[in-house]
Image (tube, rainbow, N blue to C red; front, side):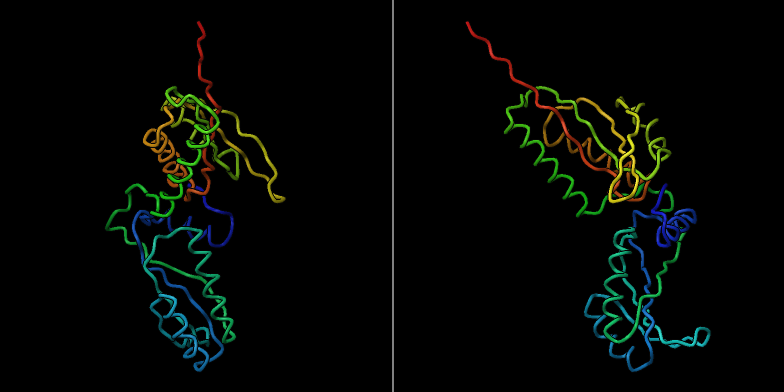
Length: 240
């Protein structure tokens, strides 16, 4: 499994190696360091109002006051980043700042279960499928015929493509060479796979669900799957 190459990504990678079950919710602790007890007490109601359990403690080891902010959640890179930004903005109101996060690994349950999409991820994927299917129909495509769907992954390295290429080939997909692309000053690799499919909501959803599962299982996030497209299949007209 691949994670972003930054501090939070490294923590997630360590948790993955230690057996954290990403398909289950976990209590995650976020740490907001504040200048003193008074500022911490002023911050507590703001953090609790944002939906966190919160406790203010003084650390003899670090000689500082820290708000321990806890929340039960799915451990996803994007959520970790967003919550740290949210708590940092709240902390800045009293002169504080975010100082990391942590969660416990419980290897007694579910350590090897398959990771799953979040509800909002699934809803967004299915809505995008519907919109693309409707666009094909509006363009005059023959919706009674199979369409060749090309699925796209946006990856950090070529090696990431190799992690899923074998599985997809065995499942009957055509696998194409990753293409280097510069995006926002960074180099990424566009990895495409293709397979014919009836352009129905049910059939397409099954295809994109599989792609999302691969992205989560191998890379830790559905963000690596970038959707699909298909060419218009023209209808045949006969004149007598």
